[in-house]
Image (cartoon, rainbow, N blue to C red):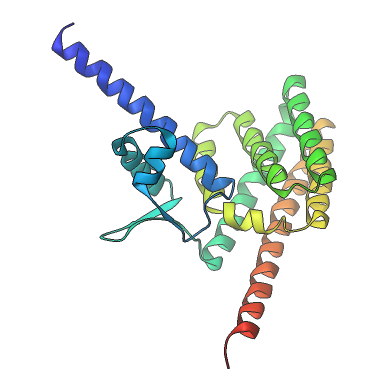
Length: 235
């Protein structure tokens, strides 16, 4: 085999492996396996995933660029914790994007796409019945991600995914009890109903209201947690 071809194949294999490692670490972070602020151990992850440390190191770099982790010189790599003020700003951006997504889908969703959204609703419904917040969280992420994908705007999808990765912590906290999950599910059903009916204004409004409700829940959770921390602090 020519040396140049061998080098190209090796590069492709390395790139593919790094992508797989990056996706697995990202999945674990979004699922809540690694808490915000926790340190990621390069050697331990390499052993767990059955790879050398090189792909893990490169995956860390990609996750840093995506905003999911932060690298600190001489200290290591940590799962990023988003400040509440930044999270609220992201919710405002999401609201504008989701409002537009709702409008576009109501204008031209296909029967196959609508069937997929209803299947995701059914998955979230099962999670609510089982009081399984982790399962609901993952289905919720997929529900919103697919709606954005269905619009067919690659730049929007890339931007949306980066923002939602950064919001993952707060979105999990908003699912702390089954009552919250039921409320979110009802909002999702309202969105899909408007889209299915071709109600452009209704779908846009339902999407906007859903994101702003999430923003208010996030703010309320933060206020509550700060109050608890203050009451537990030594006097």
